[in-house]
Length: 272
Image (cartoon, rainbow, N blue to C red; front, side, top):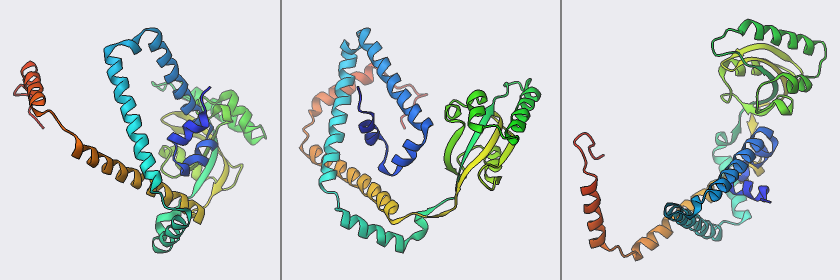
C-alpha cells in the first residue's frame, strides 16, 4: 500500500497543502492518475516490457536522475537557514515589499452543470431543465443533493457541486462574472451559459482581498529559498562532476561521424 501522504509531500509544495487537501477534485484526480500509472506499469511488466534492452536503458537513466535529485535535495537541506533566519527575512520582505504578499478576493461556490450538445440542438431543452432546477432551489431544495443527482461536472458533482475557493481569472468569463456578482452566502444565479453548458451557481462563502499572515509569508519565502538552494546545489554538483569528467574524445568523434553518415542532414533540415 502506497503512503499517499508522503507522495503528496514530495510533489505538492508545502504552501499548497491546505488548498490541495481541501479540493476533493484535485485529490481525486491526483490519486486516479497515480493508480492509473501503477496499473499501466503492472500491465507493462506482464507483457515483459521491463526486460527489454530499451527498458533497461530508460530505467537506468530514470534511476540516475532520481538519485541525482536526491543528492541535490540533501545538499540543499544541509544548507537550509534556520527558522529564526527565515522569520527575520519574512518580516523584512513584508515591510519592504508589502504588495508582493497581497491576497486577491476569493469566493467559494457550488454549481450544477448541464452540458449542451456540440451542435446546440438541445440548447432549449437543457436551459428549460436548468430553469426548473433553479425554481426548486428557490423553493428551498437542497443544492448539494440536486447537484449530486443532476450535475455532469465530474470534478465537483460528487461533492455537491462545490468548487472550493478561487480568485478571478480561474474560471471562464461568463461563469466568473455571474459567480462574483453574488453578494451573500445562499444567493443563486442562473441559468448561466458557458462553453460547457448551462450552470446554476450558489455562493457558499467569500474571502475579501487582504494580506498574507506572517506565517503564510514565512512559508512562501521558505519555499522560494528552498527552490533557490536546490538550483544552486544542482549547479555546484554539476560543475564539480564536469570538472572531474574525462570524455573519450576520439570515441565520441567517431560516434558523431558514424551517426552523421547514417542520418545525413538534408538541405530542408538546417541546423538551429
